[in-house]
Length: 188
Image 1 (tube, rainbow, N blue to C red):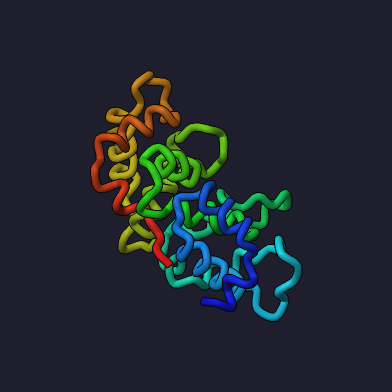
Image 2: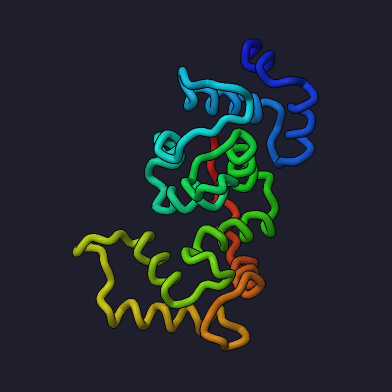
């Protein structure tokens, strides 16, 4: 790890520790993994790694929301899902065991908000269910099962009865789910 530490200036390491929920060792490991993903194209600090390379990480490979995760954490104006090192740290920080319920639920909401309109409507919820159940003929819910499930979700979650779930309603539901925090993580 000595070689990795020399590539990441101490002042940046300290700043990253202050701005994330990650330990020094986790940041150094993240830097090493990010550099490996960059490969030979390892250009100047601040270069990006494509979503395709990020998705090769075993921690994301089988996650049904892997592409949404990249899009949500990417600060690239092109909307291509590529990540800078800071984006990568933000992703790892939000999914770390040390992240607060508020942070985890905020990012989960953004990941589940497929159309990025600030609410979870029936279309978002249907995509969410399909991601979780799979979209094969064997696992896909029937139209009636989906309708009933979406009605149940909205009945439980839509406090203001506007037909959508906003962030505060989502956070209220999540606060009653003790398993959420432990299941919303990625460990390198």
